[in-house]
Image (tube, rainbow, N blue to C red; front, side, top):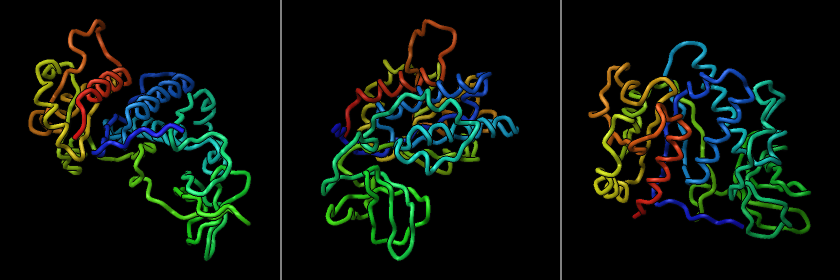
Length: 284
């Protein structure tokens, strides 16, 4: 089983609700979100925040779609039927590439110590969960019906029994969490108050020039957040439209693709390029 190490810090990325707005068909929207989810998983991102970069109805609708597709792809396959009803927004979800995260195990024989994601299928003084085995598992906790939990198998005979565990305390990278907020990008930065905030922008300082300074801050950071712009506007423009200045709100405004060979870099391309660079910086 793949056991990627957990980062010593909690890495978050902020992506715009309008990410799929310029894509006309749901099939292509779904495919583009699939690329984002793969990048988040590959680079061990802990949290993705979908921020509000437009107050109109369409932008909010696109943000909900973005969140829904990310959550669906991050959910282990054996739980999807219980946690997601038939939804026209998910009609092309079958085209999404598998993530193969540690939280997405293949077929396994139950054995004590296995950790799995599970959904609550019966509740009471104790609860019954579907953890992807042939038989359900009982957990000695009162849980909400259809709640998603992380469990560790503690007994296999005569019935499967388990206990709740905190996925954030596992020694390996487990998965990413998705949050959709009504906050603007500037409001999100002010609210979160991270110890390192990095903006990505074509107009920023090139990563070649900033590498040493960024590396020092990256290794000492506990809760870094990396910001990405929309198809129409970069992070500085999005912040400026809300009355914020990128130089005041962000520790670094970086161009992670110096001398780009195309007129515009898509958000998913910027995400992959930036996380690739940051992955080389090392960790404390």
